[in-house]
Length: 101
Image (cartoon, rainbow, N blue to C red):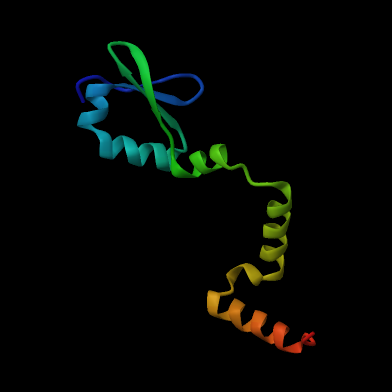
């Protein structure tokens, strides 16, 4: 790497644009594996940030409390591991039991 990435106290990786370009694959893995952000600088000025997709989704669309509770309930009851086909069968069975108007 032309310049060695530095790590700030808040666990952010800081790297030059040239260093990021030369080692993008390694840095991409590091951002994902370590759940850290990467600040890319050009001539000493921060220009961009690279974050993992998981972190981006949390920032872009925070999970509402209701969905979090439903997810926990599904994990506890074991329904979170159902396949799409199994879910479709359950829905079809429930609809067939419901009286038609």
